[in-house]
Image: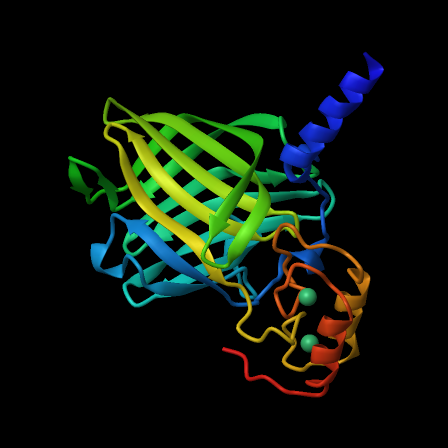
Length: 294
Ligand SMILES: [Ca+2]
Ligand SMILES: [Ca+2]
């Protein structure tokens, strides 16, 4: 019996070994949010301008801050040829959470008051939370309804968030990640409205994919974007514009490891799935190189 069980365990590890372990993302502190570093995403779908599908855009978490209702929030922008969007996010170091205060797309603006919790650390599959808030919408576009020009307040909005474990293939690579899904339920002009915001977070606390979708009164994806390229300079692992000892330290941290799921920063410079002397030698040959940042 014992030997049959052992064979079963070995087969299960062989078949599912890479996906058995659970990811837990701890609060990385203010420095761990890649503040101001440009990340390149490709647009998979949008209700704003369908011509932008397939184009790339740059997402930045800050570094600029804006004051909304007396509190400072990072102005997180996504810019591309078709315009862009802003997400107002706050890092609460005491409570180890990221708060979300508002979103704007072109002329459409949503203020969330009180701010809701977008990410509650540690992030782990099965975690959930729920909050009540109020949305003030300016120039909101309701699918199948048109633009509502006046300012509207949607009270008693319930925002429920649930985290699940998954893996995802995007243009930048394959990632083990956590899906953070927030569902906003409320009513607008007597119509039930449901909006779902999804963020796939990598083990390195980087958003790999994001989308925002109406499921009521009609089903429509407002935008959907995936990580295309996190860092155009593979040797400058920490994005500070130069390849030096700090970057080499990131490679040595992972030395000897097999990289099954993409890491950001990526220590597997030659992309062969292992961090070894080949990566170190390649890196050393570029030591001191400078890179121009966007
Ligand atoms: Ca560097
Ligand atoms: Ca390698």
